Image 1 (cartoon, helix red, strand yellow):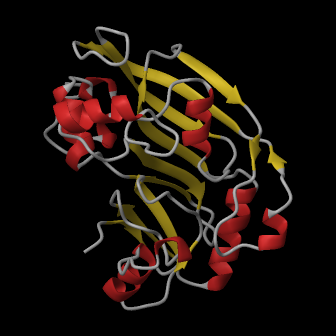
Image 2 (cartoon, rainbow, N blue to C red):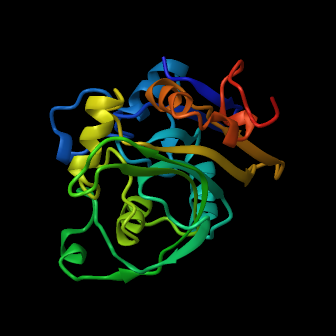
Length: 254
């Protein structure tokens, strides 16, 4: 059963687990489990995906229950009227805060027009980040006797495919567990020494106006599983807003 974070007659928001595809794709022809189909079967009605999360990314995933609401939400995402907040663990110690304003070459999905994909297109992409915590661990990586990592809050102002992963790679602070844009040696440290094999990227929060009522909504997915265990092990939980953590975990408010 998929954890449901919000539900009414127009919308459903779930907490997507890491490793689950949003919908069927030709790139994973043998996969049989998809969030779209699982949610449809779980609540007994058709749903429409209005945005994407990468397979390895967990957190808030929003669906519409009609094509009309899906179109409204799609426009809100396109017009940047949805605030998205992510949590990530990255290599190194970035500045306390910053902006990554770096255009990205458009990535096409397997379901998009192949003739368009043949023409390189650069798209504006902006990401704000804030360093919440950092640590230095006594694990040798490459020529260094110790390794540095940081916990970041990320706010993408645009919605390009793999934007956060590509932007963090661009500033030389790749996301841990990212096998495409990350660093294998650091991924190995977390997998072998810290027991965390997933990509450490999560959509923790979406804020937007309800597309029908106009009421402000804030949908939050608390940390769970490997990500939560890692944050607790590295003593980073106190740096997070209480609502991003399950009940009973120590926070900055005590």
